[in-house]
Image 1 (tube, one colour):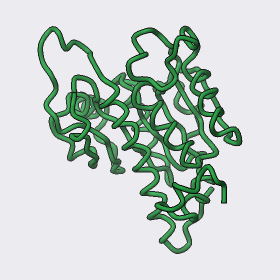
Image 2 (cartoon, rainbow, N blue to C red):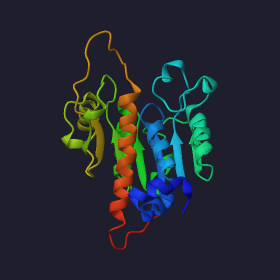
Image 3 (cartoon, one colour):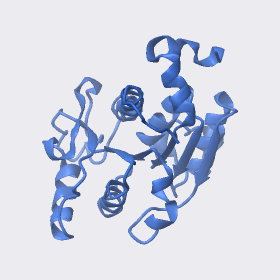
Image 4 (tube, helix red, strand yellow):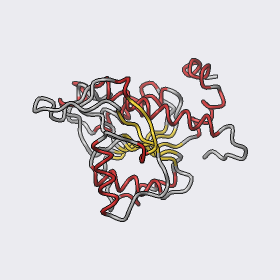
Length: 240
């Protein structure tokens, strides 16, 4: 047993830790949500991870993003995040793709190579394209983050199938876009969202805090771990 993972194995079981090491995950968006999801998964034993984000570290990221430090200012987020992850998971294979995902570029990512796709991006158009592509891949499980901004209470973070998410502006915008572009994805997928009503007023703007964005990211990681643990009980389940 790897001593670094011994405490995780006590609660998840060694079989889940071993399965996680064989699992392939791609995380789109390494901001206040995606960075903490990636960190949690690698700290729990994930060995095959792809990070996708075209943005660079800015001062406004310091309040909530795992890789945002004085020493990484101006760096590509995926490169800074990769270095951070390798500092405690040196045996992990991490691909850092400084690219934007949209309807045109989506086929180039080869989503069918992965077990799990994590959607932590906030552009409605790009998010809709990713969701449509991921749900069209047999054998791929998608977990998607809805809006974490303008909330203060991490205890209000929930998960539910997309059609059941209520009170979330991003989910509403996605539903409208799906209706305009050919309908909702046929394959269900689970989202992380907040049951807390968003703040309103000029002062709120696009504000967000780590206590909520990190909770979103950790919940996404927990969904992967729980789904993986459940899959071990299914006879004939083949892990990549």
